[in-house]
Length: 581
Image (tube, rainbow, N blue to C red; front, side):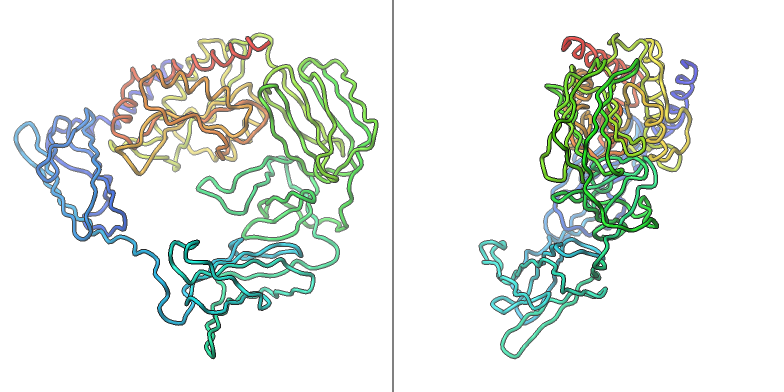
């Protein structure tokens, strides 16, 4: 393993060093990417690289050049033309010059619509929609002020006072709750503006239709990698995931937005699910509320369990508490009869279970634990839903633990790129291999997503770890920002509350390297933060986009220090768990 890590490090140096080693002056810019640029924001950056030892000036002002030959500066533009001359000078006095120009025109502030017209409208939810009775549409429109505005079914819109719309009159808003008599017929929605004999009309960009009345549309999940989301839209990581479901879970579909079905979990809870993950070619019948009558709580040699019998495989959601340790599972579409048993049979981690009914069609299992949760799995055997609760290991040391290590990106997925030209995928693999060696020296077993330069789909990484079910999971990445000057530092990211202590322990140790603090961040939607089977940490070691951070990362000694700090953070986490016994 040492040989593999050393070989990869030599490859890394071979990739990067030629970019530094040239003694002849040159300039390669990452920001801006063109010589002529039109922008609407005043703050811009000049960032790139030159030869090691070269001096750089921008409009005759000296710029700091890092040992890697990189540099980054921030510029505040004035309105109009902004020209900059960048000069690199090598040890022989030879120079290389690059000229760049920004044309800065600020975005004009909103103005009152001066003629009778509609400027724009926004309807939410956004997208081509198929909806059900009771769904709500919201609209915002900008047009000529002081007029009368209407939209769906001639419902009037209210003009906002200028004090509520940035000092600009002419913004109209409204909402509409769909009724059984409504028929959208895959049509566009119109907003209208009326003033005297004049009428202005604007059609929606998207189309809207109603779900058929009568028997509801039902579907079943296709496998245990099916997940629910809180919306049909999201950021670059996709819509926020609520949780994973087992195979064949029954879902009541109430709408369609883009590539997602909208599903009714219970009377007060809806969610979304990607269309390909639901099989609707099943017998269609109205969903029935399931009565919970049989419950068991027991332990065996491997884990503790809570299990209840249902009339069908119903959807569920879960969350956790750390202090005191607790797992909370809601089964949607179920309610409990009186007198359910709470007898514990041979449990070692579970100290008690409370059966609760937070809503008439939501059955809750509140599972109390001796420790903070170490991980749990929810699955069905027939129509019996089971929560399998992991036990905190008796020996709280790295020796004997199974730890997943994920080297972020790889192959065609290069990740971010530093100013030197080094790829994130190269650095994450190098760090992951070093971490593997360090963990194995501590006596841990390690499961790797990749040990070579290759592409591995994120869904395959997730599937691997959910099948292997390690004790802990660490995903190694490097952060990036469009601001190469002000943004730097180390960060950890997690989604579930029970993963916060692991991330906090690692983050505290990483700060000992002297890196800036980019925080320990919760509720993060990265795919490997979503499982509940094990505590996980997304370690964004530092910002590859920042030349100072990148300079540190390309130092083998600093890489080793990072690995040492991660190991110490893991030991701190395990020690804190032991002290909580």
